[in-house]
Length: 221
Image (cartoon, rainbow, N blue to C red; front, side):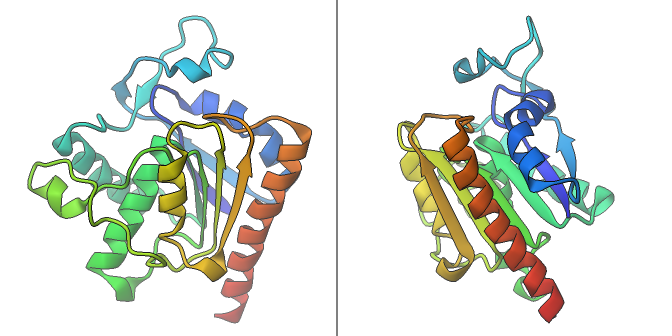
């Protein structure tokens, strides 16, 4: 499978590659990954200090408090996938996960017959509330009325830390995906992709479950 990979705020593509290295190794060499870097310079996320290389530049895809910036990012993501795709799946961490889910909800709302752009989604530490797209188009940030339980019809894996301050948003976002198609793993750490051997086993299980379901769906179709 070919995956589009979106990093978190105050991070970059190299850091996401490092964060997911052990997981990707366990998934084997049958997948490929397109790590897309944000273009908006952003202060490094304080939780990433152990991942940084000196004065490494870090970015965001948007300013999460600015409606115009968020809407532009959603539009650019749509254009990027149209130009560089197709992709089989998406991997997102933190804001990257939020942008991907918000975009998919909007795509499905606008044209449910066209289907989703991905067969599978893998989301880590989505600690940002999902965006109300109608509000963004009006120049407002509003996180109310954005979640419809089970509205996204694709296999997904949702992974977050129990000690992450925004874990409630990750839990809410997971509910946008149908119960029968979503797998959840909660580790005991904070805003990170856990590197412990036990957590790696748990993460690989839910990710492989989602990928396997997506592959089964393709065969059925």
